[in-house]
Length: 157
Length: 157
DNA sequence: CATAAACTGTTAGTACACAAACTAATTTGC
DNA sequence: GCAAATTAGTTTGTGTACTAACAGTTTATG
Image 1 (cartoon, rainbow over the protein chains, first blue to last red):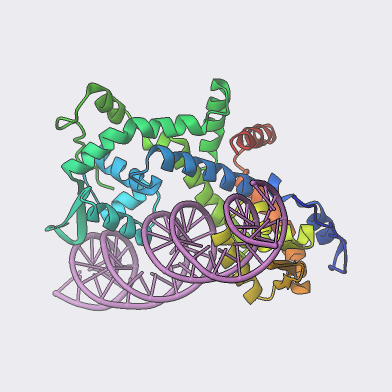
Image 2 (cartoon, helix red, strand yellow):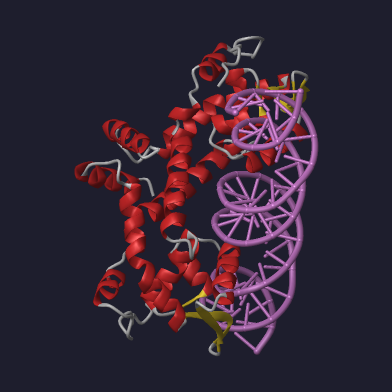
């Protein structure tokens, strides 16, 4: 790793305020940046322990197994995924035979989604690994710290 | 909001362990799920306060303004973005005239990236807003809680 | 010095994620 | 009873994000 010549302060950038603000802006101290990194680590743990599904696909399948059935948009709302995104997720799960869909006679706009027997089986098979993913992600923290962290994280929802 | 009929426990799903594991699996209590939600909120705050750039584009520009220059892959490494992804980010910043690139004579593989004057100006203009993004994201926490949270979050990197 | 190993950037492929614009179906409000 | 608003799902477009495979360049090694 070579050090690059640092030359931040160079020219006229308007007011003194924005100069000072920009000068001591530390990208790696910002919540968003660190969260992105933590998420990268989490995704890597997830795909190692559960190579069969993406986190989003697993969320959808898990929620569908928990509720029994739901319409497509309804499912998206339950797991915080918008209508445009959930479509692709559902298509892929359907294509793999993990969920089924049929239109609801009483409301022709709606697609009723249900997990197939295969989908339920897969969910049950990997639910232990899913719990392990959370555990591994929080591994760097002590039991007490985990509780505090999860508590604060939930407040930022 | 209508309640759906809950019918989770229905058929033979192998061992008692995985049944029990699956039965009390609460998606909304998992780190990964909550982090995704927190990130959604953060992204929404970001795009409201800084509509000019995405968080990733801002990271790249900010780091380039801080270091003066870097090669493409080097820049990616500094902000935790892989080679395939950084290409698109750099292309878009270049297309908008915020950074420039030229190949390095001493190593023909490398593209040396630098912020343009316009890029530097934009960075200085929005750096205050960038700090505000972090502040707003952490708003639900008290000062003490913010410190604790950032400390624990950093441990999960 | 030759060549294997490592590195830089590129491309293709898959999968989110969201905004905006659209169709069709259903509710509502007057 | 009917127009207006709402809802469900789809499509398009943009922007991450990662894997895998690849070509050209540089470096390290035998």
